Length: 327
Image (tube, rainbow, N blue to C red; front, side, top):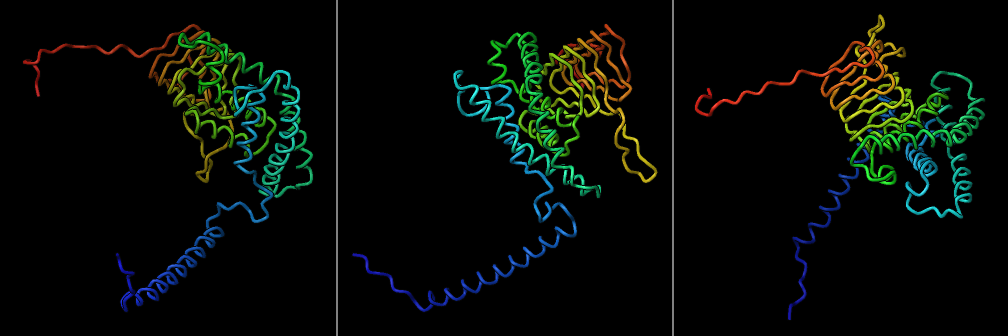
């Protein structure tokens, strides 16, 4: 039978030493906390103490998820939508969406008003208008999205059904998020369009700025690495492959060396254009004419007329016998 272990004098000495070490650690942590708090005033990056003038990123993302459920009922969300209950489902969802949208849009508008030292009185009324107009645009957004789904189905021989595309293709989530964000962007709702578009970017690898203008039946095949800039203009029935960049050629600076904001910086892609993987098209004055094809890895900084095919020359291959190879 094991005997109980008795504490020794050396064990008793350890207790106050551990307490002393813990006291010193906690004191050190308190000093660290003070340094961090002081950095908020010195370096910024702190949501203001009243908590009213910045939207909640988590709540905005939750709003986006509910909007996607509204656009594709039964596809997004954790549970099915029974057809007999669809009216109840939609009524309950838009009621909650209106309340949450209005609050987060008001926060973003108040933040912008304070930033620009303008009157905040009209922010709540403006948030009401923007929230209602976004919800009113849902049928039109849905029509555009079903055209995008059709473009994916018709443009991808591997696609088995529309359901497969909506459930699994990253381009649909990215494009749906863009179309929602664009409605907020054109109504000048601050912050929120970028929050939701960058959330979609992090999930899908597809970066579409909410300011871009994109036509009907848009398809991004595979998708990873696609970048579409703020002032890009894309026509109808356009198809992009992975790694395509529609970017800015250069950034103008003012006399203080700061970037000049605004202006057309990104290319225009006309109707019925296909752009293959890795192609880079830059500049606000660059236009790709309708019914053109831009091959893989092409670099373009100038316009292309309609019905043009642009490719990089095929590499030559030379088979060299092993004995003839040089170091």
